[in-house]
Image (cartoon, rainbow, N blue to C red; front, side, top):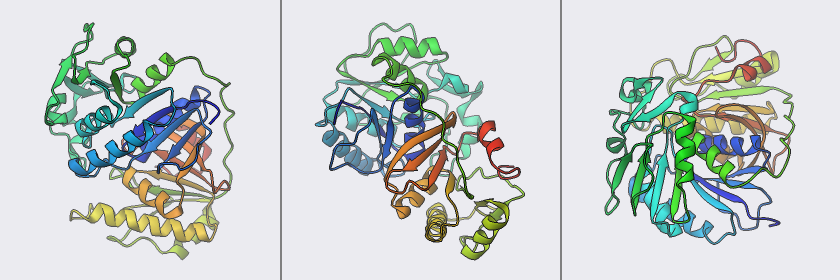
Length: 375
C-alpha cells in the first residue's frame, strides 16, 4: 500500500457508505468493504461493514473485536468507529470490543448529527427538537427507541462505565464511554479537540467529518461526479416505504415476478419495488423480505435488466449486495447526506445508490431519475 489509510468500522452497509461519502467529498479515495481483505487495498479511507447491528450483543462483540484486532495490525493513519446516529444496535458492546482490541483506554461517543437536527442536550436525544422516543424511531422494527436518555439507550456492559458530559468538559474520564452533549458544529469541534492516542473516536457523520479534518488536509481535488445511465431498479426495503406511480409491491412475502419487473424496467426505464402495504407479522418477516429482494435482484442482474440499483434499508442492502457478490465498492458520487452511489470494483458496468432508511432521498437525485419513482 503506497500510504497508510484511515480505517473505519461500521455496523451496517448504509452507514459505511455514508462515511465513505464524506471521505469522497473531502477529495479522498474511499472504498467500502464487506470482508477483511487478504491483499492491500489502494485507498485513502477504508470503511468496513461488519454487518453486526442485528447480531445479539455477545456475537456482535466477538465479530467486531476480531475485525478490529485484525485491522489493528494494518498500517493506518487513524481508526474511527461509526455507530448509528440514534444508537440502534449494540453500540456499547461495539465500542467496548473495539477499544479493547485497539488498546484504547476510553471511547468518546458522539452519535448526534446537529447538521441534520439530531442533537443531545443534558444527556437527552432529540430530533428536530422532538424527544427521540416521540418520533418515528419509537416504531423501529428492530430497535424501537423508547427513551431519549442516552444512557438508557446504550444499556450496560460489564466494567464499562458510561457518563454523559456537557460541552464545557475539558478532560475526559480515564476509562469507559463518554457521551458528549452535541447541539452545534462548535460542540463537535470541541470534542474532537479532546481526542488523544488512548481515546477511540466513535459516532455519527458529523463527528467523522470533524475527525477526518483533524487528521490533516485532503490529498486530492474533489472527484468529478459520475453520470448514471441505463435502467434503474429501486428496492425500497425500509419499513418507511412510500407509495408511488411506478411502484410494484410484494404480496405477503412474495416478490413481484422477475418477468413483471423486467417488463416494467424496459417500458419505463425505472421501477420501484417495495414491501406490502400492511406490515407483515412475525419476527422473521424482515429477513424473509430481504431474501425476496435479494433473489429478485440476482435474477434481474443476470438478465442485465438494470444498470443502476437503488436501495433503502440496511438489512435489504446487505442481503442484495451479498448475493450479487459486490464486496468492494468505490464511491463515485454523493447526492446528499447519507445518499451515495458506489461502483462495484469487480462489476464496474453497474452502480448502486444507498441511503439509510431514516434519511430522505435528496432532491437532486429525485430530479435525475424519472418522476414518480420516489413519491
